[in-house]
Amino acid sequence: MDAADQVIRYAEHDGASIAWSAIGRGPALVIGGWWCSHLELDWRQPRFRRFASGLAAEHRVIRYDRPGTGASDRSRPPPATLDEELAVLETVIAAAGVERLSLFGASSGGGVATRFAASHPESVDRLVLYGTYARGVDLAPPAAREAMLAVVRQHWGIGSRVLSDLFLPDATAAERDEFVEFQRRAATPGAALASLAEVYAMDSTGHLADVRAPTLVLHRRNDRAIPFALGRDVAERIPHARFVELQGADHFPWRGDAHAVVRETRAALGDRVEAGSGAGAEESGTPARAPRLTDREREVLRLVARGETDAEIAAHLVLSVHTVHRHVANIRSRLGVPSRAAAAAWALRSGLI
Image (cartoon, rainbow, N blue to C red):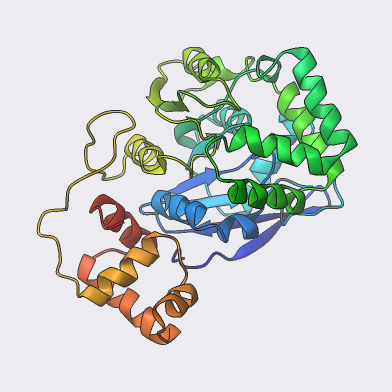
């Protein structure tokens, strides 16, 4: 499937429907386990689409919403334990028809990613962890954890704003307001409370030493949501894991220097990426024998790389959707790439945006 538009599908798990989607082509890369996600709303965000499309340049990227959240069945509570999280992930992987895969475990999603890798070593090629931790009790002192749970329990509106300040320290007031609204739409007050409680209760220390897949652990130095030392702790607990320090304070990988996260991840997955100047460095340079694109094609490609759909590009450039679709097809042909995501990745590498 091209990465232009995602299609949400549903898998049945224990009487509940789990929403999942896939973009791109190639070996499977599964992302999931976020405490608060929404496949449809995430995909509307240009930064998120750009990040996911970058990962999908040479992979089939599979994402899902946990039960009780996002586009999944809201009548069921979110998973309360790692065992339940693992069962959900196994259901999604089976529905996607995947036998071998790599995993990208970010934030609280690191627990289920490592649990799957430890439980199914024969199925996992590579593991990338970003901004994660081993024990939820290490995230904050007991009083701070109880206070956070109390504010979410008593007033989800206030709780969602407190969390936005924690997750988006460098965001504008408007961006924080948007994320507050996103959280409220992605989870009910009860689901948010249950998910946050699981974040604090999660403990991966019992299985991290059993992970056998080649593992990369990424962590931003000034992450306020998950302290930097906790990421290093995870790397030390996984045999032969490689730890890479990234700069910045944003917790979400698609914010801040998202290029560094994509580049390091794709390199760890064995993708063809240009060498950078070190951890956290931006990709630079233009591929040899760069194809000649018209000014209009470059303009369209720049918007593709920003995560805009054909309809959004058409409105932006005052063109018909058919014309934009034709431009995108020509661009892919000139670049010799198999998908829209690969074209976006080329634009990023070439410094077009």
